[in-house]
Length: 220
Image 1 (cartoon, one colour):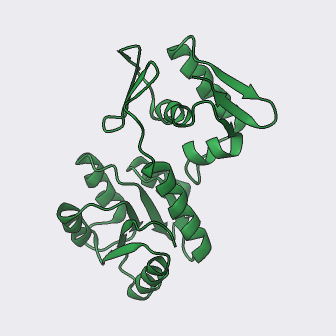
Image 2 (cartoon, rainbow, N blue to C red):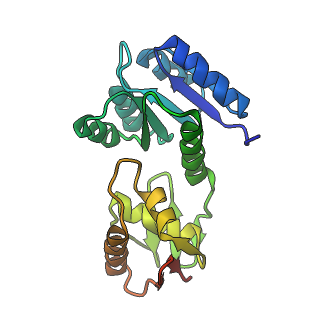
Image 3 (tube, rainbow, N blue to C red):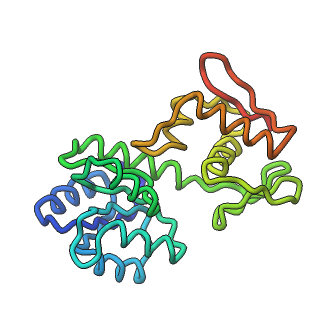
């Protein structure tokens, strides 16, 4: 059984919500169900959650607007959209609002569990505030090098954070893509190289080795 995590399930389809709640609770998760966006917003004021499962088409306050309001209030809780939408415009809107992943209805239960666990695994591991010459503030998404704040894009920040979290370990290319590019985004080995080069422009002596045929390793 997994370590208990608290999940807020926001879904107006009662039968689907009951099915998902039963599935997650069998896996050891603690699940709170909200039937609309306004109820969900109230619940987030009352308690903290480890993950949001958000239907996009919610009554009173739709899922995208709900997540935008939460992000504007500095709520960084990871979120997975449950959606019947397949149009890229709607999915882009979901990611732009602060969504981390999505799964299309009807979905396979095992795939849902895998996505939840993968996202929680990426966000639950605490980092020390300092690693070598790097200072990390995950609340403000800021990394400093030798006491100088780095002006990083979101992807640059996430990639550098991943390398710092796994210093001196070889990271397979597939792992990097899964960790940095959400489902539906176009991650590739070429994109990894682009962002590594951008990081090296920020930090000239950054030592990231290319392990041919496997992935990359940050040497601290």
